Length: 138
Picture 1 (cartoon, rainbow, N blue to C red):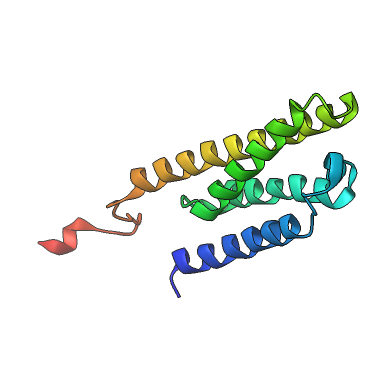
Picture 2: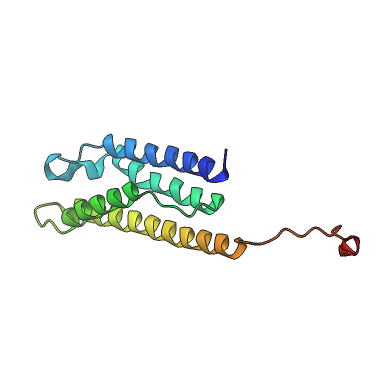
């Protein structure tokens, strides 16, 4: 099995866990009461696991479905944060959730870029071993 396959499988497990947490939150609640729900915050903070994965793995591929999920959530949270019908507490929680997820996605993107640059720098490199002796080529 290639390293890329193993990395992809690890990443997919983390992404699937995040999506499962997302599905565990009832977002269509009146007055955005999900913002007070522990399961909602578990979902938001679960993105940190993905950031850690990229920091530790060297993987440089982002799942498009995760970017779509982030876009969907950022729209939802932005609307809630600016909804004058909500209490100030709920608007603040929505803004906090938006800030936290945006922070994680920015960290994730920066790490993926670093990982990609590291891979580019090693592409085509020939491993040299100190015991290689060119005199044997004569």
